[in-house]
Length: 575
Image (cartoon, rainbow, N blue to C red; front, side):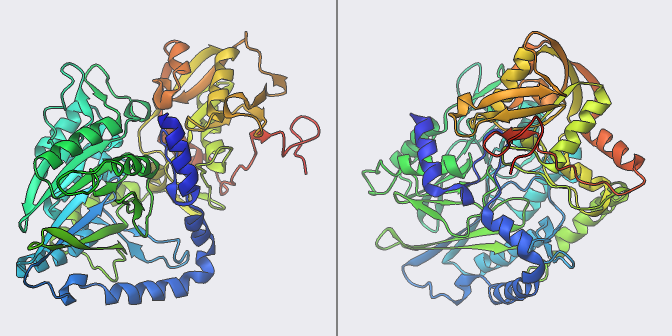
Protein backbone atom coordinates (compact mmCIF):
# COMPACT_ATOMS: atom_id res chain seq x y z
CA UNK A 1 0.00 0.00 0.00
CA UNK A 2 2.73 2.45 1.01
CA UNK A 3 4.69 1.67 -2.17
CA UNK A 4 1.62 2.49 -4.24
CA UNK A 5 1.21 5.82 -2.43
CA UNK A 6 4.88 6.73 -2.93
CA UNK A 7 4.67 5.84 -6.64
CA UNK A 8 1.45 7.84 -7.04
CA UNK A 9 2.82 10.91 -5.27
CA UNK A 10 6.12 10.76 -7.15
CA UNK A 11 4.21 10.59 -10.43
CA UNK A 12 1.99 13.46 -9.30
CA UNK A 13 4.80 15.80 -8.34
CA UNK A 14 7.12 14.69 -11.13
CA UNK A 15 10.79 13.80 -11.23
CA UNK A 16 11.79 17.38 -11.96
CA UNK A 17 11.97 18.64 -8.42
CA UNK A 18 11.15 15.53 -6.42
CA UNK A 19 14.62 14.10 -7.01
CA UNK A 20 13.46 10.92 -5.33
CA UNK A 21 16.18 9.30 -3.33
CA UNK A 22 16.27 5.57 -2.81
CA UNK A 23 19.34 4.28 -1.04
CA UNK A 24 21.55 7.15 -2.01
CA UNK A 25 20.13 7.68 -5.53
CA UNK A 26 19.23 11.27 -6.28
CA UNK A 27 17.94 12.53 -9.59
CA UNK A 28 19.07 15.98 -10.69
CA UNK A 29 16.21 18.27 -11.58
CA UNK A 30 15.89 19.16 -15.27
CA UNK A 31 15.70 22.81 -14.28
CA UNK A 32 19.00 22.60 -12.43
CA UNK A 33 20.58 20.67 -15.29
CA UNK A 34 19.31 23.15 -17.86
CA UNK A 35 20.63 26.07 -15.80
CA UNK A 36 24.01 24.41 -15.50
CA UNK A 37 24.32 23.85 -19.25
CA UNK A 38 23.08 27.31 -20.14
CA UNK A 39 25.09 29.00 -17.40
CA UNK A 40 27.81 30.16 -19.77
CA UNK A 41 25.61 32.52 -21.78
CA UNK A 42 23.11 33.32 -19.03
CA UNK A 43 25.80 34.14 -16.51
CA UNK A 44 25.89 37.95 -16.80
CA UNK A 45 22.11 38.21 -16.47
CA UNK A 46 21.84 35.71 -13.62
CA UNK A 47 24.65 37.28 -11.68
CA UNK A 48 23.26 40.79 -12.13
CA UNK A 49 19.78 39.64 -11.13
CA UNK A 50 21.12 37.78 -8.11
CA UNK A 51 23.04 40.84 -7.01
CA UNK A 52 20.03 43.17 -7.17
CA UNK A 53 17.67 40.67 -5.55
CA UNK A 54 19.98 39.85 -2.68
CA UNK A 55 21.00 43.46 -2.18
CA UNK A 56 17.37 44.50 -1.91
CA UNK A 57 16.57 41.74 0.59
CA UNK A 58 19.70 41.72 2.73
CA UNK A 59 17.63 43.33 5.51
CA UNK A 60 15.01 40.96 6.98
CA UNK A 61 11.63 41.34 5.34
CA UNK A 62 9.98 42.05 8.65
CA UNK A 63 12.09 45.14 9.32
CA UNK A 64 9.64 47.05 7.14
CA UNK A 65 6.53 45.30 8.43
CA UNK A 66 4.16 46.76 10.95
CA UNK A 67 3.92 44.14 13.69
CA UNK A 68 2.40 45.98 16.59
CA UNK A 69 -0.43 45.36 19.03
CA UNK A 70 -1.79 41.84 18.83
CA UNK A 71 0.49 40.62 16.05
CA UNK A 72 3.61 38.52 16.56
CA UNK A 73 6.03 37.12 14.02
CA UNK A 74 8.02 33.89 14.28
CA UNK A 75 10.80 33.42 11.73
CA UNK A 76 12.05 29.87 11.18
CA UNK A 77 15.36 29.68 9.32
CA UNK A 78 16.36 26.25 8.06
CA UNK A 79 19.14 24.29 6.36
CA UNK A 80 19.64 20.65 5.41
CA UNK A 81 22.31 18.29 4.06
CA UNK A 82 25.23 20.66 4.66
CA UNK A 83 27.59 17.65 4.38
CA UNK A 84 30.58 19.38 5.97
CA UNK A 85 30.66 22.33 3.58
CA UNK A 86 31.99 24.97 5.94
CA UNK A 87 33.85 26.73 3.11
CA UNK A 88 32.05 28.58 0.31
CA UNK A 89 31.63 26.87 -3.05
CA UNK A 90 32.11 28.22 -6.54
CA UNK A 91 28.72 28.76 -8.20
CA UNK A 92 29.79 27.39 -11.58
CA UNK A 93 26.14 27.01 -12.61
CA UNK A 94 25.98 30.83 -12.68
CA UNK A 95 29.28 31.56 -14.42
CA UNK A 96 31.73 28.82 -15.37
CA UNK A 97 34.57 31.25 -16.12
CA UNK A 98 34.21 33.51 -13.07
CA UNK A 99 31.96 31.74 -10.58
CA UNK A 100 30.81 33.77 -7.57
CA UNK A 101 31.27 32.27 -4.11
CA UNK A 102 28.18 30.90 -2.44
CA UNK A 103 27.47 29.39 0.97
CA UNK A 104 29.92 28.48 3.68
CA UNK A 105 29.45 28.63 7.44
CA UNK A 106 30.75 32.19 7.79
CA UNK A 107 28.20 33.55 5.32
CA UNK A 108 25.41 31.62 7.03
CA UNK A 109 26.58 32.91 10.41
CA UNK A 110 26.43 36.49 9.12
CA UNK A 111 22.92 35.95 7.75
CA UNK A 112 21.71 34.44 11.03
CA UNK A 113 23.37 37.18 13.08
CA UNK A 114 21.38 39.80 11.14
CA UNK A 115 18.20 38.04 12.15
CA UNK A 116 19.30 37.58 15.77
CA UNK A 117 20.01 41.30 15.98
CA UNK A 118 16.48 42.01 14.74
CA UNK A 119 15.14 39.53 17.28
CA UNK A 120 16.96 41.40 20.06
CA UNK A 121 15.55 44.78 18.97
CA UNK A 122 11.94 43.77 18.43
CA UNK A 123 9.78 42.28 21.20
CA UNK A 124 7.22 41.10 18.62
CA UNK A 125 9.78 38.98 16.67
CA UNK A 126 11.35 35.61 17.49
CA UNK A 127 13.86 33.68 15.36
CA UNK A 128 14.65 29.96 15.44
CA UNK A 129 17.23 28.06 13.36
CA UNK A 130 16.63 24.43 12.29
CA UNK A 131 18.60 21.77 10.42
CA UNK A 132 17.23 18.60 8.80
CA UNK A 133 20.29 16.35 9.07
CA UNK A 134 23.45 15.06 7.33
CA UNK A 135 25.66 17.70 8.86
CA UNK A 136 29.22 16.48 8.25
CA UNK A 137 29.82 13.59 5.85
CA UNK A 138 31.28 14.65 2.50
CA UNK A 139 34.29 16.94 3.01
CA UNK A 140 37.67 16.47 4.67
CA UNK A 141 36.79 19.24 7.14
CA UNK A 142 33.60 17.45 8.13
CA UNK A 143 34.95 13.91 8.13
CA UNK A 144 38.29 14.26 9.91
CA UNK A 145 36.72 14.89 13.32
CA UNK A 146 33.74 12.61 12.56
CA UNK A 147 31.42 15.58 12.81
CA UNK A 148 32.74 17.29 15.95
CA UNK A 149 33.92 20.36 14.03
CA UNK A 150 30.50 20.73 12.40
CA UNK A 151 28.75 20.55 15.78
CA UNK A 152 31.09 23.27 17.07
CA UNK A 153 30.24 25.42 14.04
CA UNK A 154 26.52 24.83 14.58
CA UNK A 155 26.86 25.73 18.26
CA UNK A 156 28.59 28.98 17.34
CA UNK A 157 25.98 29.88 14.72
CA UNK A 158 23.24 29.16 17.24
CA UNK A 159 21.07 26.32 15.95
CA UNK A 160 17.94 25.63 17.99
CA UNK A 161 16.76 22.23 16.70
CA UNK A 162 18.08 19.50 14.39
CA UNK A 163 17.01 16.12 13.02
CA UNK A 164 19.33 13.13 12.59
CA UNK A 165 20.34 12.29 9.01
CA UNK A 166 21.43 8.88 7.78
CA UNK A 167 25.01 10.05 7.20
CA UNK A 168 25.17 11.34 10.79
CA UNK A 169 25.35 7.62 11.65
CA UNK A 170 28.18 6.81 9.23
CA UNK A 171 30.58 6.37 12.14
CA UNK A 172 28.15 4.43 14.28
CA UNK A 173 25.67 5.03 17.08
CA UNK A 174 28.33 5.80 19.69
CA UNK A 175 29.82 8.56 17.55
CA UNK A 176 26.34 10.04 17.05
CA UNK A 177 25.90 9.96 20.83
CA UNK A 178 29.16 11.90 21.24
CA UNK A 179 28.00 14.52 18.74
CA UNK A 180 24.59 14.86 20.39
CA UNK A 181 26.13 15.28 23.80
CA UNK A 182 28.40 18.10 22.56
CA UNK A 183 25.56 19.93 20.80
CA UNK A 184 23.93 22.94 22.48
CA UNK A 185 20.66 22.23 20.69
CA UNK A 186 18.19 19.31 20.78
CA UNK A 187 18.92 16.63 18.20
CA UNK A 188 15.84 14.60 17.34
CA UNK A 189 14.74 11.44 15.52
CA UNK A 190 11.56 10.07 17.02
CA UNK A 191 11.69 6.90 14.93
CA UNK A 192 15.31 5.97 15.75
CA UNK A 193 14.69 3.37 18.43
CA UNK A 194 16.69 1.28 20.89
CA UNK A 195 16.88 -2.34 19.71
CA UNK A 196 16.67 -3.61 23.28
CA UNK A 197 13.82 -1.56 24.71
CA UNK A 198 11.99 -0.28 21.64
CA UNK A 199 12.09 3.22 23.11
CA UNK A 200 13.60 6.23 21.40
CA UNK A 201 17.41 6.23 21.75
CA UNK A 202 17.95 7.72 25.19
CA UNK A 203 20.53 10.32 24.18
CA UNK A 204 18.23 11.90 21.59
CA UNK A 205 15.74 14.63 22.47
CA UNK A 206 12.05 13.91 22.34
CA UNK A 207 9.22 16.07 21.02
CA UNK A 208 9.21 19.53 22.52
CA UNK A 209 6.73 22.37 22.91
CA UNK A 210 8.33 25.79 23.14
CA UNK A 211 6.31 28.86 24.07
CA UNK A 212 7.45 31.47 21.56
CA UNK A 213 5.96 34.95 22.01
CA UNK A 214 3.08 33.33 23.86
CA UNK A 215 2.46 30.75 21.11
CA UNK A 216 2.93 27.04 21.82
CA UNK A 217 5.03 25.65 18.96
CA UNK A 218 5.74 21.92 18.83
CA UNK A 219 8.92 20.48 17.29
CA UNK A 220 9.91 16.89 16.61
CA UNK A 221 12.23 15.03 14.23
CA UNK A 222 12.14 11.89 12.13
CA UNK A 223 14.77 10.23 9.96
CA UNK A 224 14.58 8.04 6.87
CA UNK A 225 13.03 4.63 7.36
CA UNK A 226 15.51 3.41 4.73
CA UNK A 227 18.33 3.89 7.25
CA UNK A 228 19.23 0.19 7.31
CA UNK A 229 19.62 0.25 3.51
CA UNK A 230 21.61 3.45 3.10
CA UNK A 231 23.91 3.02 6.10
CA UNK A 232 25.47 -0.03 7.70
CA UNK A 233 23.39 0.53 10.85
CA UNK A 234 24.15 -1.93 13.65
CA UNK A 235 20.65 -3.33 14.10
CA UNK A 236 21.65 -4.95 17.39
CA UNK A 237 21.86 -1.41 18.79
CA UNK A 238 19.13 0.50 16.98
CA UNK A 239 16.34 0.18 14.45
CA UNK A 240 14.16 2.67 12.57
CA UNK A 241 10.40 2.75 13.02
CA UNK A 242 8.33 3.52 9.91
CA UNK A 243 8.11 7.27 9.37
CA UNK A 244 4.32 7.48 9.27
CA UNK A 245 3.78 5.60 12.53
CA UNK A 246 6.26 7.80 14.37
CA UNK A 247 4.93 11.01 12.83
CA UNK A 248 1.27 10.33 13.61
CA UNK A 249 1.96 9.21 17.18
CA UNK A 250 4.22 12.17 17.96
CA UNK A 251 2.04 14.81 16.30
CA UNK A 252 -1.02 13.56 18.20
CA UNK A 253 0.98 13.76 21.42
CA UNK A 254 2.03 17.36 20.74
CA UNK A 255 -1.50 18.42 19.80
CA UNK A 256 -2.89 16.76 22.94
CA UNK A 257 -0.43 18.78 25.03
CA UNK A 258 -1.65 22.02 23.49
CA UNK A 259 0.67 22.69 20.55
CA UNK A 260 -0.88 25.41 18.40
CA UNK A 261 1.58 24.92 15.52
CA UNK A 262 3.53 21.69 14.84
CA UNK A 263 6.83 21.51 12.94
CA UNK A 264 8.24 18.17 11.83
CA UNK A 265 11.95 18.26 10.95
CA UNK A 266 12.34 15.39 8.52
CA UNK A 267 15.31 13.63 6.97
CA UNK A 268 13.13 11.46 4.74
CA UNK A 269 13.29 13.05 1.28
CA UNK A 270 10.73 15.13 -0.57
CA UNK A 271 8.80 12.21 -2.08
CA UNK A 272 8.32 10.63 1.35
CA UNK A 273 7.54 14.02 2.89
CA UNK A 274 4.90 14.60 0.21
CA UNK A 275 3.20 11.31 1.11
CA UNK A 276 3.49 12.05 4.83
CA UNK A 277 1.97 15.50 4.30
CA UNK A 278 -0.94 13.97 2.38
CA UNK A 279 -1.66 11.45 5.13
CA UNK A 280 -1.00 13.76 8.10
CA UNK A 281 -3.24 16.36 6.48
CA UNK A 282 -6.16 13.94 6.40
CA UNK A 283 -6.43 13.94 10.21
CA UNK A 284 -7.44 17.15 11.95
CA UNK A 285 -6.72 18.22 15.50
CA UNK A 286 -10.08 18.61 17.29
CA UNK A 287 -8.91 21.63 19.29
CA UNK A 288 -7.52 23.72 16.42
CA UNK A 289 -9.07 22.17 13.32
CA UNK A 290 -5.62 22.08 11.80
CA UNK A 291 -3.72 19.11 10.30
CA UNK A 292 -1.70 17.00 12.72
CA UNK A 293 1.43 18.70 11.34
CA UNK A 294 1.53 22.24 9.94
CA UNK A 295 5.03 22.31 8.47
CA UNK A 296 7.61 19.75 7.32
CA UNK A 297 11.16 21.09 7.21
CA UNK A 298 12.80 18.53 4.97
CA UNK A 299 16.12 17.07 3.93
CA UNK A 300 17.75 13.89 2.55
CA UNK A 301 16.81 14.24 -1.14
CA UNK A 302 18.84 17.45 -1.72
CA UNK A 303 15.75 19.04 -3.25
CA UNK A 304 15.73 22.76 -3.93
CA UNK A 305 12.17 24.00 -3.42
CA UNK A 306 11.81 27.62 -4.49
CA UNK A 307 8.30 27.61 -3.06
CA UNK A 308 6.78 25.35 -0.41
CA UNK A 309 4.69 22.41 -1.50
CA UNK A 310 1.22 22.62 0.06
CA UNK A 311 -0.52 19.28 0.44
CA UNK A 312 -3.81 19.02 2.35
CA UNK A 313 -2.89 22.04 4.44
CA UNK A 314 0.64 20.85 5.24
CA UNK A 315 3.56 22.82 3.83
CA UNK A 316 6.84 21.11 2.84
CA UNK A 317 10.13 23.02 2.43
CA UNK A 318 13.73 22.05 1.60
CA UNK A 319 16.79 24.11 0.61
CA UNK A 320 18.88 21.84 -1.62
CA UNK A 321 22.25 20.89 -0.13
CA UNK A 322 25.80 21.87 0.83
CA UNK A 323 24.83 25.04 2.70
CA UNK A 324 24.44 27.17 -0.41
CA UNK A 325 20.97 28.40 0.58
CA UNK A 326 18.88 28.99 3.68
CA UNK A 327 15.11 28.86 3.93
CA UNK A 328 13.24 31.68 5.62
CA UNK A 329 9.72 31.06 6.93
CA UNK A 330 7.60 33.90 8.32
CA UNK A 331 4.68 32.92 10.58
CA UNK A 332 2.50 35.89 11.53
CA UNK A 333 0.25 35.35 14.50
CA UNK A 334 -2.68 37.21 16.03
CA UNK A 335 -2.28 36.43 19.72
CA UNK A 336 -5.61 38.01 20.65
CA UNK A 337 -7.57 35.81 18.25
CA UNK A 338 -5.18 32.92 18.88
CA UNK A 339 -4.57 32.02 15.27
CA UNK A 340 -1.98 32.24 12.51
CA UNK A 341 -2.85 34.98 10.04
CA UNK A 342 0.05 34.89 7.65
CA UNK A 343 2.71 32.64 6.06
CA UNK A 344 5.54 33.87 3.84
CA UNK A 345 8.54 32.01 2.49
CA UNK A 346 11.68 32.74 0.55
CA UNK A 347 14.71 30.64 -0.34
CA UNK A 348 17.84 32.75 0.03
CA UNK A 349 20.99 31.92 -1.94
CA UNK A 350 23.98 32.83 0.20
CA UNK A 351 26.11 34.61 -2.38
CA UNK A 352 29.05 35.92 -0.38
CA UNK A 353 29.01 39.30 -2.11
CA UNK A 354 25.49 39.90 -0.84
CA UNK A 355 25.82 38.06 2.48
CA UNK A 356 29.41 38.69 3.63
CA UNK A 357 31.06 36.30 6.11
CA UNK A 358 30.58 36.91 9.79
CA UNK A 359 33.96 38.22 11.06
CA UNK A 360 33.95 36.12 14.22
CA UNK A 361 33.17 32.88 12.36
CA UNK A 362 35.68 33.77 9.66
CA UNK A 363 38.44 34.16 12.28
CA UNK A 364 37.50 30.83 13.88
CA UNK A 365 37.57 28.97 10.54
CA UNK A 366 40.67 30.60 9.02
CA UNK A 367 43.37 28.35 10.55
CA UNK A 368 41.23 25.25 10.01
CA UNK A 369 40.70 26.00 6.32
CA UNK A 370 44.37 26.88 5.84
CA UNK A 371 45.46 23.53 7.27
CA UNK A 372 43.17 21.58 4.97
CA UNK A 373 44.11 23.71 1.96
CA UNK A 374 47.77 22.73 2.27
CA UNK A 375 46.88 19.04 1.99
CA UNK A 376 43.80 19.09 -0.23
CA UNK A 377 44.96 21.72 -2.69
CA UNK A 378 47.64 19.44 -4.20
CA UNK A 379 47.25 18.97 -7.98
CA UNK A 380 47.25 15.25 -8.82
CA UNK A 381 46.47 15.37 -12.54
CA UNK A 382 44.36 16.88 -15.29
CA UNK A 383 41.07 16.11 -17.04
CA UNK A 384 40.48 17.13 -20.64
CA UNK A 385 36.77 17.66 -19.99
CA UNK A 386 34.35 17.37 -17.08
CA UNK A 387 34.06 13.72 -16.06
CA UNK A 388 30.40 13.53 -15.25
CA UNK A 389 28.40 11.34 -12.93
CA UNK A 390 24.73 10.51 -13.40
CA UNK A 391 21.99 9.61 -10.94
CA UNK A 392 19.82 8.07 -13.64
CA UNK A 393 19.97 4.41 -14.59
CA UNK A 394 22.74 3.68 -17.10
CA UNK A 395 26.45 4.30 -17.46
CA UNK A 396 28.25 7.56 -16.73
CA UNK A 397 31.82 8.57 -17.59
CA UNK A 398 32.80 8.82 -13.93
CA UNK A 399 31.08 5.55 -13.03
CA UNK A 400 32.93 3.85 -15.86
CA UNK A 401 36.24 5.26 -14.65
CA UNK A 402 35.77 4.26 -11.01
CA UNK A 403 34.65 0.70 -11.77
CA UNK A 404 37.47 0.26 -14.30
CA UNK A 405 39.96 1.36 -11.63
CA UNK A 406 38.43 -1.02 -9.08
CA UNK A 407 38.75 -3.90 -11.52
CA UNK A 408 42.33 -2.99 -12.39
CA UNK A 409 43.38 -2.60 -8.73
CA UNK A 410 41.90 -5.98 -7.76
CA UNK A 411 42.43 -8.04 -10.91
CA UNK A 412 38.70 -8.82 -10.91
CA UNK A 413 36.69 -9.75 -13.98
CA UNK A 414 33.66 -7.66 -12.93
CA UNK A 415 33.20 -4.54 -10.78
CA UNK A 416 30.15 -2.83 -9.25
CA UNK A 417 29.79 0.66 -7.71
CA UNK A 418 26.61 2.22 -6.28
CA UNK A 419 25.74 5.52 -7.97
CA UNK A 420 24.87 7.10 -4.63
CA UNK A 421 28.49 6.65 -3.55
CA UNK A 422 29.73 8.93 -6.35
CA UNK A 423 29.16 12.31 -4.75
CA UNK A 424 30.57 14.82 -7.26
CA UNK A 425 31.92 15.09 -10.79
CA UNK A 426 35.57 15.73 -11.68
CA UNK A 427 36.14 19.20 -13.16
CA UNK A 428 37.93 19.91 -16.41
CA UNK A 429 41.50 21.13 -16.12
CA UNK A 430 43.56 20.69 -12.97
CA UNK A 431 42.34 17.92 -10.68
CA UNK A 432 43.15 18.42 -7.02
CA UNK A 433 43.05 16.00 -4.14
CA UNK A 434 39.98 17.85 -2.84
CA UNK A 435 38.15 17.05 -6.09
CA UNK A 436 38.74 13.33 -5.60
CA UNK A 437 37.69 13.63 -1.98
CA UNK A 438 34.42 15.20 -3.14
CA UNK A 439 33.88 12.26 -5.52
CA UNK A 440 34.59 9.53 -2.94
CA UNK A 441 34.30 11.02 0.57
CA UNK A 442 33.32 7.90 2.50
CA UNK A 443 36.70 6.18 2.69
CA UNK A 444 35.27 2.99 1.17
CA UNK A 445 37.86 0.38 0.24
CA UNK A 446 37.98 -2.15 -2.62
CA UNK A 447 36.75 -5.63 -1.68
CA UNK A 448 37.24 -8.72 -3.87
CA UNK A 449 34.74 -11.59 -3.99
CA UNK A 450 34.41 -14.93 -5.70
CA UNK A 451 30.78 -15.57 -6.62
CA UNK A 452 28.74 -17.67 -9.02
CA UNK A 453 27.29 -16.11 -12.13
CA UNK A 454 23.81 -16.61 -10.70
CA UNK A 455 24.53 -14.06 -7.95
CA UNK A 456 26.01 -11.63 -10.49
CA UNK A 457 22.80 -11.98 -12.50
CA UNK A 458 20.69 -11.20 -9.41
CA UNK A 459 22.75 -8.09 -8.67
CA UNK A 460 22.31 -6.86 -12.24
CA UNK A 461 18.55 -7.58 -12.18
CA UNK A 462 18.17 -5.73 -8.89
CA UNK A 463 19.91 -2.69 -10.34
CA UNK A 464 17.30 -2.65 -13.12
CA UNK A 465 14.48 -2.67 -10.56
CA UNK A 466 13.44 0.90 -9.75
CA UNK A 467 13.25 0.08 -6.03
CA UNK A 468 17.03 -0.12 -5.60
CA UNK A 469 19.88 2.27 -6.20
CA UNK A 470 21.31 1.76 -9.72
CA UNK A 471 24.85 0.48 -10.13
CA UNK A 472 27.81 1.39 -12.32
CA UNK A 473 29.57 -1.59 -13.90
CA UNK A 474 32.83 -2.70 -15.47
CA UNK A 475 33.77 -5.94 -17.24
CA UNK A 476 30.22 -6.70 -18.31
CA UNK A 477 27.70 -5.41 -20.85
CA UNK A 478 24.03 -5.66 -19.84
CA UNK A 479 21.14 -5.85 -22.33
CA UNK A 480 17.67 -5.10 -21.00
CA UNK A 481 14.17 -4.28 -22.22
CA UNK A 482 12.80 -1.05 -20.71
CA UNK A 483 9.30 -1.88 -22.00
CA UNK A 484 9.02 -4.82 -19.59
CA UNK A 485 7.98 -4.59 -15.92
CA UNK A 486 10.84 -3.47 -13.64
CA UNK A 487 11.37 -6.95 -12.15
CA UNK A 488 11.62 -8.61 -15.58
CA UNK A 489 13.78 -6.26 -17.67
CA UNK A 490 17.02 -8.23 -17.84
CA UNK A 491 17.63 -9.83 -21.25
CA UNK A 492 21.28 -10.92 -21.15
CA UNK A 493 24.68 -10.25 -19.61
CA UNK A 494 28.00 -10.57 -21.41
CA UNK A 495 31.38 -10.95 -19.69
CA UNK A 496 33.71 -9.87 -22.44
CA UNK A 497 32.27 -11.63 -25.50
CA UNK A 498 30.82 -14.58 -23.60
CA UNK A 499 27.33 -14.80 -22.04
CA UNK A 500 27.31 -14.86 -18.25
CA UNK A 501 27.44 -18.48 -17.00
CA UNK A 502 25.29 -18.93 -13.87
CA UNK A 503 27.39 -21.89 -12.69
CA UNK A 504 30.84 -20.41 -13.25
CA UNK A 505 32.71 -18.67 -10.40
CA UNK A 506 33.74 -15.09 -11.22
CA UNK A 507 35.98 -12.64 -9.42
CA UNK A 508 33.99 -9.52 -8.54
CA UNK A 509 35.20 -6.24 -7.05
CA UNK A 510 33.05 -3.72 -5.23
CA UNK A 511 33.35 -1.12 -2.47
CA UNK A 512 33.19 -1.93 1.22
CA UNK A 513 29.73 -0.38 1.60
CA UNK A 514 28.13 -2.69 -0.95
CA UNK A 515 30.27 -5.56 0.32
CA UNK A 516 28.49 -5.26 3.67
CA UNK A 517 25.06 -5.46 2.05
CA UNK A 518 24.59 -1.69 1.72
CA UNK A 519 21.71 -0.36 -0.41
CA UNK A 520 20.06 -3.77 0.18
CA UNK A 521 22.50 -5.61 -2.12
CA UNK A 522 22.67 -8.62 0.19
CA UNK A 523 23.98 -10.80 -2.65
CA UNK A 524 27.50 -9.71 -1.66
CA UNK A 525 27.09 -11.01 1.89
CA UNK A 526 25.58 -14.23 0.48
CA UNK A 527 28.77 -14.75 -1.51
CA UNK A 528 30.68 -15.08 1.75
CA UNK A 529 33.35 -12.83 3.22
CA UNK A 530 35.23 -10.90 0.58
CA UNK A 531 38.89 -9.94 0.75
CA UNK A 532 39.37 -6.26 1.61
CA UNK A 533 42.38 -4.99 -0.32
CA UNK A 534 42.89 -2.13 2.14
CA UNK A 535 42.99 0.49 -0.64
CA UNK A 536 40.41 3.23 -0.69
CA UNK A 537 38.69 4.44 -3.84
CA UNK A 538 40.37 7.82 -3.37
CA UNK A 539 43.78 6.18 -3.31
CA UNK A 540 43.30 4.28 -6.56
CA UNK A 541 41.80 7.39 -8.19
CA UNK A 542 44.76 9.54 -7.17
CA UNK A 543 47.29 6.90 -8.29
CA UNK A 544 45.59 6.79 -11.68
CA UNK A 545 45.63 10.55 -12.22
CA UNK A 546 49.25 10.82 -11.08
CA UNK A 547 50.27 8.08 -13.53
CA UNK A 548 48.82 9.87 -16.55
CA UNK A 549 51.05 12.25 -18.49
CA UNK A 550 48.19 13.42 -20.69
CA UNK A 551 44.84 14.80 -19.48
CA UNK A 552 42.30 12.07 -18.74
CA UNK A 553 39.56 11.62 -21.33
CA UNK A 554 36.05 10.71 -20.12
CA UNK A 555 35.06 7.11 -21.03
CA UNK A 556 31.52 7.34 -22.43
CA UNK A 557 30.88 3.66 -23.24
CA UNK A 558 27.27 2.60 -22.68
CA UNK A 559 27.45 -0.56 -20.61
CA UNK A 560 23.72 -0.76 -19.86
CA UNK A 561 22.04 -1.22 -23.24
CA UNK A 562 18.32 -0.99 -23.79
CA UNK A 563 17.42 -3.33 -26.68
CA UNK A 564 14.85 -0.75 -27.76
CA UNK A 565 17.73 1.66 -28.48
CA UNK A 566 20.41 -0.79 -29.65
CA UNK A 567 20.23 -3.08 -32.68
CA UNK A 568 22.57 -5.13 -34.84
CA UNK A 569 25.36 -7.36 -33.59
CA UNK A 570 26.74 -7.68 -30.11
CA UNK A 571 28.09 -4.39 -28.89
CA UNK A 572 26.89 -2.53 -31.97
CA UNK A 573 24.95 0.63 -31.28
CA UNK A 574 21.65 0.96 -33.13
CA UNK A 575 20.25 4.05 -34.77
